Amino acid sequence: MNIGYVLDDVTINEFGRGNTVVTQLIANLDARAIRMSIPAVTLAVAQHDLGDAQIDAVHGTIKFVEHVRLEAVSTLDETQRISEVYAYLADQPDPAAAHVVAVSRHLGFPVLTTNRKRWDPVLAQLPWTVEVFEISDTD
Image (cartoon, rainbow, N blue to C red):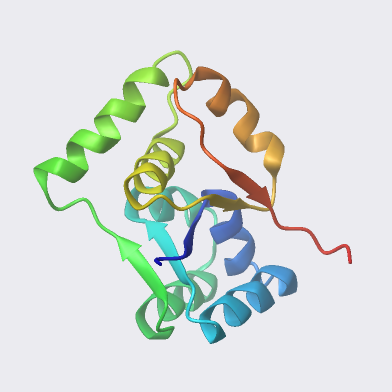
């Protein structure tokens, strides 16, 4: 069975800022060989307001943590999957969310976020069910 999660822009941004809950979660999931997918378009959005050292930390994690994978847009099929999602978000364009949803649907993985409310307007526009789990620091 293939198990994994798709990290959204808010989570990637929080990781870059040194959020210890997100950092520990990534380490724990990696230790359990659970895949974490980071959509490339989402990464671009997430790092727009991070500093160079923070971006380097995120990029280092993608390069060197075994179960973290960058989901590139390198084939026509990948482009089409994003386009299909993006068509439903036309009223509130959100390329980061479109790529997350496209990867989530393709891999069958739920989305991990540090802000569940970020997803309410996105999910309201989609004809599909996408599982979204919120990461929190409460026990």
